[in-house]
Amino acid sequence: MKKFMFLVVSLVAVFALSGCGGDSDDYNDYDDEKKFHLVDQNGYGISDIKYTCDGDRVRVTDGSGGFYFYPNDHCTFELDIALDLEEDGLYIENDDNRGVEGVRYTCTSGEEGYTDRDGYFEFDNIYENDTCTFQL
Image (cartoon, rainbow, N blue to C red; front, side, top):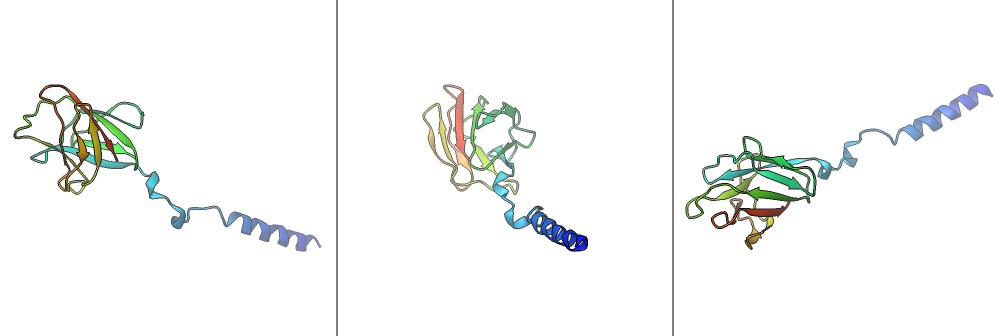
């Protein structure tokens, strides 16, 4: 009888624990932090731009213009850099150096819209230091 009870308890434990583990089908990649880059018209990263995503702590873009976020975050950038908007522009690119199209943005200057196929967006830093929020 003891052997039978031990066998029953062992089988119950095996079935109970079989639901635990790292089945990749249950993995939600929306929980992974993503990285895009803020770059100029020549593809050079714009570093040291302050940004926050969904009220998190203030961070700065890295040497490649890289910034980190989670999908569906709203990230706000303090764009107080000196660019000649007649000739220069800012773009959002992915890790493959391709523009990120269709990102909704609004700026305190009144500029708003969606990034184009090259990742370009409009902002104003001639008359004021602009702050733009992107819905990633």
